[in-house]
Length: 637
Image (tube, rainbow, N blue to C red):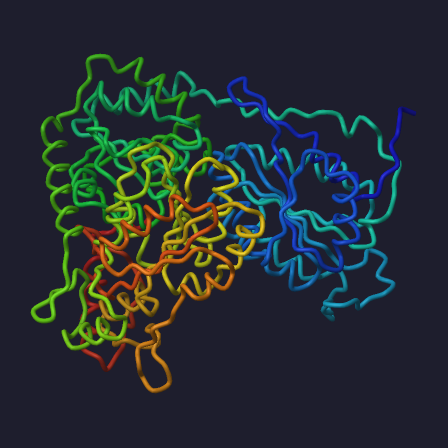
């Protein structure tokens, strides 16, 4: 028998995590950076003891909410292009249950995170223990079973020796570009402290190779044929292109073949907007330029995209009568979407190979690319200069909004600042290499259209799940990945209220983040959705029990935590606040009161949402008629 090391299950886990490395393009680095922890019963005496005794190179950060710290870990992985991760440990019961939303966020975005929730006793002798529920049909069911449908891989450790096979499987999944996502390993709390004589070989250095999947000759032949047969192809850049690091290949192919480039939410900033052929985001939240280009296209070259409904405008963005699809993705499932020609390959490798085959080919877009971009830039400039008026003001969004109501908001919030002007002001005031993060509400629409990223990989939008509460926690994860850069969290008041607990963690650990709080006193995005589809304003505005618009002083909250705070209700005040915030070493919050209904709106796009088929409200009936008509033109699969 070989050498053995006697360790508890938790100690063996920590020792193993220290020995995991990843190799990409010949560059080898440790894969697990550290552990986010909220300690409680079930993990403090197991994993907590192991980390206190011998953490190795692992950094330990104390979270304030399990969902929040897991979101920070997810953002960290995304910012590192899935090449570094954090593990997350939570206590039994509610602590572990709080991980479900974060796990779903990671799964929707194909982002690796190792979740280590504590579980009940494997022996079942003290059952039911604190925070354990009981199911009559099975004593084996615990809180952590809720994590099964939102995990790429799930396991429960009831004996110390089970850890070995489980961890090997876990890291195979975490380092697979095609199936990367959340891995959950539940640790029974008695098992965490139980010892076993582990084979020393289990703790050897392991290198996980993220080799680039090369396209086959058959795939390249077919792809070349389809591109050469097209007159107006468009490159649709998804998150897979960013993770692949395909910027240079995208630019080279676009320039050589005169193909316009548009982007999804996850793909944005893979290529900087200053690139001449870059037309911005596409789909429901897209620019007029990008949406016009894809509608004119006869070939969509999707690169690392899932074709979500916001990207495809609920399958109405393209001219399906003549447009074909060519899909490049490491996931075979994704390449089959929209009946596309399937190329199962790494984006960077596939694009380089295609460029080498397409000599002499040029699209027929010609000067149309510059024309579309010029028109959009003029529209963006208009939105940046948009000013509220006390009479005759016409909101960008549709719906039954009266001037009196808008004036009431201006008076209650003490502002006349429009959201589009505020977004563009922030974009232009921060340093170009700073990283921004956002996730939910109306801001993703304004950001996808109006935010011009001039440095690659500086735009971080979680829109695979659009999880409210991601923004502040995500900023912490991004700062850990970019300790030398300023990080800006653009968050609405509704999302800030959902979760901002990791601001305290940022302050506690000295990791500066900047929160740009857009306060329009409500869930503005959903309020727009209600009213655009014929409804009234129903419980989406923040009004008190007397119907008065609430004016909450969010700056005081952050100030109480110890952040440097600012209040900025004009473009000039925003610029001044950002300049001063750059000089601070502590985390900052800039509160901006913005008027509802002053965000940007759709450009030749449609979002399929369920509308009541029967209603006493004529506006709702009309909205249903519009939806029925639009569905006639949408692709059905």
